[in-house]
Image (cartoon, rainbow, N blue to C red; front, side, top):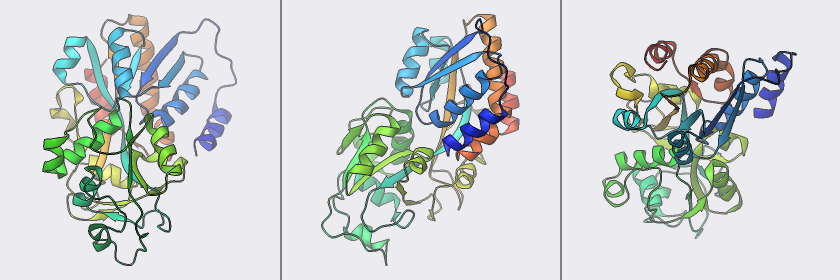
Length: 332
């Protein structure tokens, strides 16, 4: 999918080579939005207005780098509070919405066939359910041929991760035990499991470990051809991941009353809502030069407008126009 869109982007890009003296904007951070950011930075660079780079290092690394002033902007799925933004001299705004999905490697089970309730999902990651033919899993999956005596291997992120923040925030909302024992954060003390570096690392481990389960951003699961599960949402409905269901989770978000643009979209109401939906953010420094601020404003405006179609094709949800208007008023 990414290659196909990139080919289309190349064909449509300006034939003019970028000037040797063009301004370069460097960004780093979240791997959650990295597939679309890779397309955007390449396509925008072809306009000749500025060269844009983005390194997928994880949200924690991105926040550290923007605070240190070693990059022009950072990507993060773990939003900083308004107080944290002000203390660090940063501006934050939302860039995209997307879904965190649960991926599995269970022999004989097709993608989208396996259902996981809220209780079962939490108990698997707490290490309380350890086998794929556990009665709690079998009870919500009648007709699904679950393997006998196949141990469950939990795969989670080993780096500081915004995807982990979104996932553990959700687990904290659906499980009192998880909230008390583990909690939410970009890096937590996992009860069980093996680590993978960034979203691709989790996907690689799930792909090669029989009986494994993990979490990742939806586009990575699609690109790696990994099996996703259905999840039970707040309404008690089992839903499959899709851009439409991610959008349903964001439909009632009140951005006007979100100081610092901090918004959590996990466990939202609605029969169609995907339960683990997240917002990915951009951070830049208030003390950036006027030249760099102007260049970033032009780039991000291009992302919101020209880049929206490619974001949708990669199963992300572009920020609505009314919210983009709010960002233009408050962030720049």
